[in-house]
Length: 480
Image (tube, rainbow, N blue to C red; front, side, top):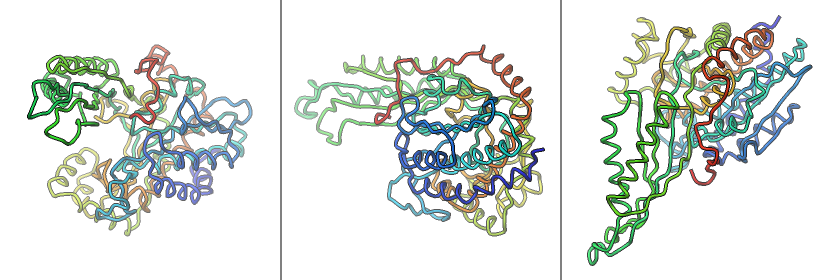
């Protein structure tokens, strides 16, 4: 019988290697589609362990799969790993003061170094337990690049990478130990390019047609749109090219990037179409030419509740990471880097998940020390997006979170980069690996649960995956 102690022992065999991989990937801090060293480190380690590795999957150089089969090879359990970093978040490891290692450099502000290495430890531990117990099945490690960019799992799903899976499991570094009951919203993004006519802004402004004016007017229109869209929707933008730096030249070229979010993939398509219409209007008003391309789209993520119940039970057995007094002290120092107003808002957000006693002393001991139960009755979405949603439309999928940072910590921050290469982050990663391992083995032992999970997915999707991107859209490698 596979129990939690067997799993702990199996994971412990690879804990040192996983931590070394996590530190190496953290030091590489490679941006989306550029994770050459990170993907290579993971794929080489898996190949050395006896997994069959395929690289350049779904047309992406840093995308790979690694497979171990035993016996019949069925059921097949997938592990979704990520390893890309974020621009501008370079930070000294485990250091509670802003101190970039490289000014303006990239950093693992979402903890994907831990995510990928934790899945690695789980993959090898699952393999060892399968061999020891004589379990039929496969464990498939998916190396998924660019989650922080235009994504990869939608391209992988479109290419059929997940078609043979009975389920997919993943995790994400966070501040709470739980299987989240809520899902994530869908997202769609694109690049909008305006081309006008250059001219002397003082001597002959009437001859110019400003691409920058078009981009600015697009933003004005989008701001008015915000009044007339769903409460759960979001619109974001950033200038990729503002037309140069010379104020005495009418800008002939401008590029602006837009992303929109909405609770479902159908809603996000509709909202994005409205943004495209606004861009067309801006071009018409300024007599400029508009070209645009869809660069990314993620489906909404809805946790498979059959799988969630299993993973929740396993996480409860594994328990929360065991923190030391030094861990609490370090976490408290990080928490103090946030303004008082921000900490008050953090406390308000923590009220539903912490006891009154925990909430009273949370600033002194700001690390989650227990597992919060999955609530199957809860519905709804958090406002962030993930390409895990596309895997979840293609195969029964569930994601858990484990504390790798202090309570209230904000993702995509320098604090998160520092936590991602700290003792706190490493302990959380090990707990995640144990929970993933135990969950996978329990599912391999109970194939009837996998059938139930598939039935649940079929009831929601009709049994087929529809990619939110047009067939002609390829991964925007070098263009995102």
